[in-house]
Length: 179
Image (cartoon, rainbow, N blue to C red; front, side):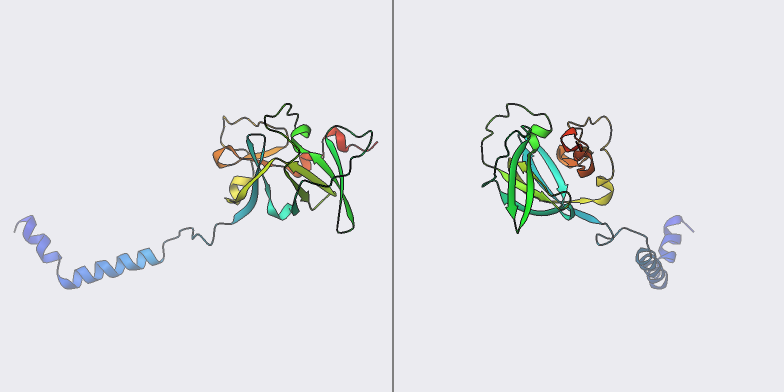
């Protein structure tokens, strides 16, 4: 009996059905990550100059157009002033100045203020991009080496070079030191 004859005898309807049932059972019980199992975190992506940064939405209170900011005399150059929102005062910080950027092209008085939930602080940014969803594992640490952080306030580097800002690191700036 040749191999071809053996093969044709093994492929009877009963064995074919048994193979398909076994395959279906194996596929049904296979451990895979379902899209619903992967925790995706929404972040707001925005621009400071030409660089893209992100903050987790859960850390934000609101976003406002930059306007009607009351200047504070004798304040640091990074402090743009204060705004009153719903009977609460928020100190508005120019994020580009805080990060040490100087002479950004096209910088003017427009932009947006991102009000943080903690600290009564608002960060002025130049332009909003959109909401991006990242996997939780991507938000925990730096991207793969040899990425170099462009700011000391970064927590991790996300896809497309977007830097996730770390709010506690922002509050370590000497501007926020108690005097």
